[in-house]
Amino acid sequence: METLVISSNARTVTNVDLIKSIKINDFSSTPKYVQLADAIVEAIKNKVVEVGDALPSINDLSYHLQIARDTVEKGYRKLRMEEVISSSPGKGYFVAKEHVFRLRIAVFLNKLSAHKKIVYDALAGELGDQASLDLFVYNSDITHLRNLLQGLPQPYDHYVVFPYFKEGKDKAPEVLSTIPADKLLLLGREVEGLEGVFPIVCENYEKDIYEALESIREPLSKYDVLKLAFPDNSDYPKAIIKGFYKFCQDYAFEHILVDNVKRESIKKGTCYINLAEDDLVYLLDKVSSKGMDIGKDVGIISYNETPLKKFILNGITTLSTDFKLMGEYAAACITNNLKSRLEVPFYTVLRASV
Image (cartoon, rainbow, N blue to C red; front, side, top):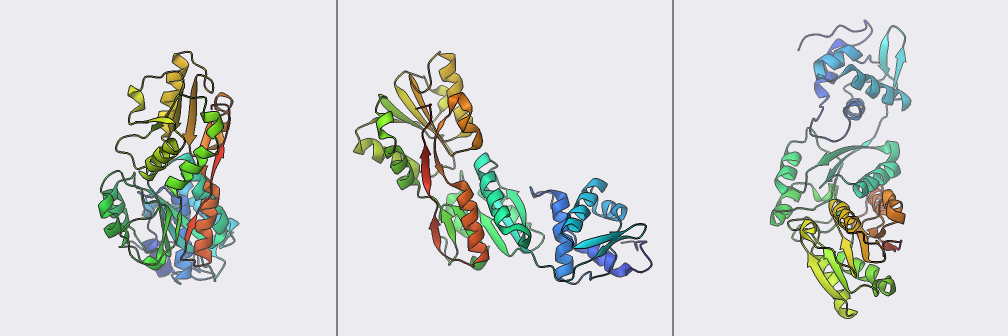
């Protein structure tokens, strides 16, 4: 790599080493300016650069890392706000803080969704400036997760994983075992066959849906049949079906499992318990097109609370994990080095749709 032309007071070789140490991962969902800022913090931690050293110019970093100037500017601005670096008019940017320690955490989501964002935001909010989070999305594909883990440019202090897979669940223990057990944190569910001592912040799917439906048994009794919309080839835990069946059998509700909402013929006297967000849209559209009243002719219950659901059609009833608390529990496991299994509370919000 060519020698960089920088301030006469700076160490040219150090700046070359710094640029070599910065890895921007195009497959990460973490913004590139955040990746850049985190990489510079890591370089300070590893003494690639030290207090008083000049940093490469915005143009140099943009050219050598092949990222936009705006990205570099935002990264430097973030570091200035955190007082990690300082700037001097006409001279550039300099390392301002020597002792910079920040946990590096890789977060793997099976998919992007409103409730996963709540978990991520709560985790990031609780950890604050003591940690930097890199976000990856593997689309419930075990092979994609394996490739992401193998392609990480550097090791992390913690790996937070939502282990939900549409296919290849039997390979999950093998893939996840490539993560050191003392750095692994599972969110949402356990993985059968995965050995080691590590924290799990999870839901109890069978018990949760049973108790949630039990809490609204009286308003449900006005419907002739309860239907659980559980899509084929989904990554939802089968324990949800088991809890649904158990509730219906214990309280003598006629019940049916629906594997494809698009093919469903809507009839009065039916209450749907819906898991997928896309299916919720189809259900609402089908009911509306038939001129039926939601909450009177047809009931609709949606899995997972999101802010928007209280505003849709005077409110959609939800059964949901406390996702904010899930993120807070995850942060507590990291900061306090917990190795326990924590169950997140589940709750029902009864609204006009039932």
